[in-house]
Image (cartoon, rainbow, N blue to C red; front, side, top):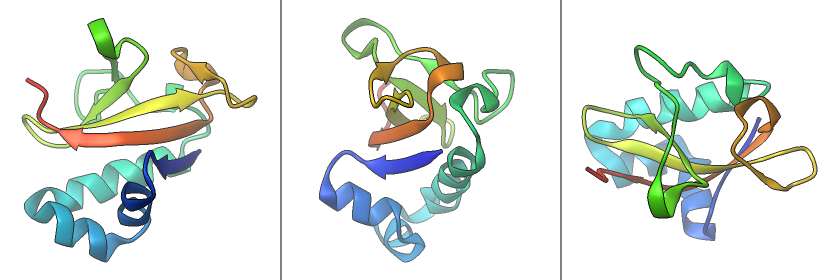
Length: 107
């Protein structure tokens, strides 16, 4: 899948392992692993939903159009998924590109 950041800064960080390490420190190895898992997947359905990480899951409420995957115990990689026509989708089997919106502890 195509993976990119929501902002030019986040896009630059997510495309450079050294910048990920500088920005996220101890979380960086897991972030790089999750990013790489997204890149090699054909669609979002290939990222396991349970039981172990990466644990893809849909978010709720005001974030109902977003997904998350585990980075650590509390931190999640948050993203929106798009289909082949560049339309926002919440169906993992249709998602062929990912826009990362952030890496955060939203609990």
